[in-house]
Image (tube, rainbow, N blue to C red; front, side, top):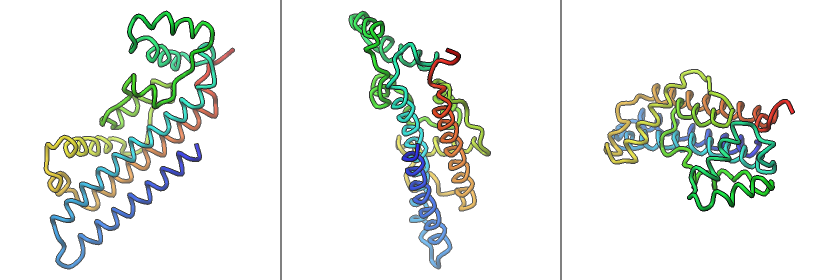
Length: 212
């Protein structure tokens, strides 16, 4: 989990550097409104990328930790993901082969990268509600950070930019520095909560079958 925390701290530094730069450009004499608007949109993309990469790294860590255990040792939540990977998203002619592998304890819990290729976990849609859905599938729980609803703003603006629904320079033009700072704080708190909950999940071995 150290690597996940380190990566997040680096991204947090990048976020703060960009936000400070936006503020400096905004208050400078003869500020270029067009430039400030573009920087604001870049800031929103950086926030969303931080959300998606952090959640991905957390799930990678869970998959990595669980991969050394066989099917029978896993929690009910992870067994469902196991089945989804080996059966739901595969053609029928492979089902017997996979069933035999599981019975012989030769089937390994997939890496997150392998799992996500076959069973798409999320795709540009991570707000607080979707993060809750994703983490709950593993039994990690829901994020409960303050102002978590602001992640919906990040997701929606990111998607509008990514899908070309609005011009890059227009998407975040009307957001003030104060509003950007509040969205930044909500994003950081949500990711810190997700990291803490996932760390607890792994430390308590909640990815394994409990009570026996």
